[in-house]
Image (cartoon, rainbow over all chains, first blue to last red; front, top):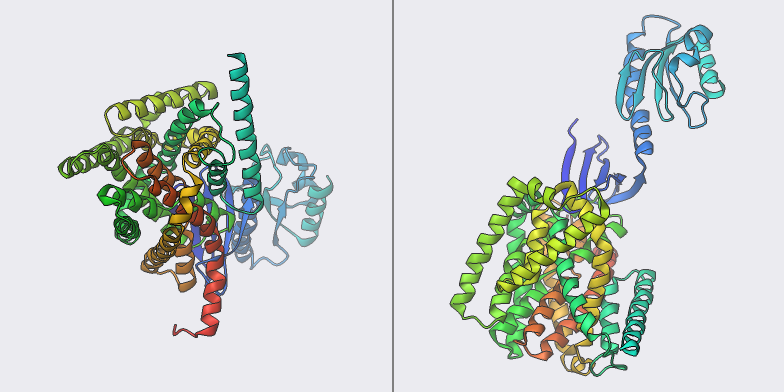
Length: 160
Length: 392
C-alpha cells in the first residue's frame, strides 16, 4: 500500500492513501504534534469532507481498531481447519478494571481458557504478551478460544 | 515629569485597550485584525480625530521592533530544508507569481508618475501575499488536508525567499543609490541569502544551540537580544534591520525554531499591532479618497492575477477545477508584508505620501476581501458551472 507523504511547509506533514473506492484518507500532523484525520469528498477528491482533530490516545485507538481487523482475519484463516476455535478482539475500555494492571492479573487462561495471542497498541503489535505486560486503555487484545470462553473473557475485561 | 508619564501610560493603555476591542471584533466577524488596526491608526494621529503625542516616542521604537519580530517569525516559519525544496519544486509558479503580481503595482506607480523607486515599492506591495492571513484561512476552512494546499504553501515559501532578495535591494534603492549600486545590492543579497541557507542546512544545529535553552526566560531574552543585535548590525551596514532578523529566523532551525515561534508569537502580535497603528497614524486620512479609485483598480487587477497564479500552479500539480479556484482565491489576501514594504519606503522619505495612502487603502481592501474570496471561491465556481456547463 502506497502512503503518499506530502510536506506542508510551515504547518507539518500530510500522509494519505487512496482507497479502492477512490477516496483519499489520511492524517495531517502539525508541527506541535496535533493530528487530524482527513477524509476526502466524494465529488471532489482534492478537498476534504472532514478534518477531525484527534488526541494521540484517540489516534492510536483508531489505529488499533483498523489494524486489528487484518490480524484477526489472518488468525481466523490459520484456525479455519480447527472447528470450535475462534478469534476475537477486545478493547480495554477507559473504565475497565484492568486499565493499568498486569495481563496476569486477569487470570484469563484459568478463568476462561482463552489465550491472549497479541496486543495492539499505538499501531504496534505486541505478539504473545507475557503475564507481566501492563494493559492500558485503548489497547486491543486479540484472543483465541472457544466462543463460550471468549464471551467469558469479554465479561472479565469489562467487569473484573 | 510625573504627569507626563501618567499621560503616556493612559494613552498607551487606551491604545492597546482599543486594539484589543478591534481584535475581538475582527475575530467575531472572521476577519484579520490588520485592516482594523490600520483604520484605528487612521482615526487617531495626523488629520484624524484625536492626536496622540504622548506615546509617539514609544510607538516609534515599538513599531521598529514590530517589523523585526514580523520578519524574524517569517524566517522561523519555514526550515531551510523546506525553503530549498520549495524553491526547487515551485520556482516556475514562483516566477509567474512575481511577473503577474509585481507588474500591476509597477504600472500603476508609473502611471501616477511616482518614478522608478515608487514603482519598485508598489510592485512589492502588490506582489506579496499575507502568509499570516492565508495560513489562518486555510486552517479555519479545514483545508489543510486538501490537495491544493501544498501548492499554496509552496508559493508562500517562494515569496518568502523572494522577500529575502527584495528587501535588501529595496533598502539600497531607497537610500538613493544608482542603478549600478542596485545591481550590486542584488548580487550581495543573493550571495548572503545563499550563505545563510547553506549555514542553516549544514550548521543549523549549531546556530540553534547558541540561542536554545530549556529555561523559557533565558530562551526569550537570548532570542530577542540576538534578533535585535542582528537587526541593528544589519541596519548599520545599510542592509535593513528587517532583513537581518529574517535571515536569523531562517538560520534557526528544527525544534528550536518551533519553540521560538511559539514563544515569540504573542510578542510579535503586540509589537506588530503597534506597527500597523503607527503606519495608520502617519497616514493622513484625507489623502486616501483621491487614491481610492486606483486602489480599487489595483485590487481588482491583482485579485485576478493572484487567482491566475494559484490556478496555474494547482493545475500543474494535477488539481481539479474547484481546487484550482480555491488555491487562487486563498492567495489573494495581502497584509502585513505589504505594509512593511510601504512602511520602509515612507520612513526613508524617498517616496510620495500618496504612496502610503494608496498602500493603506489597497491593504485594507485586500486583507478584508482575501478571506471572503477564499470562502466564496467554491460557491462561485459551482454557480458558474451550473449556468455554463463546462466540457470536462
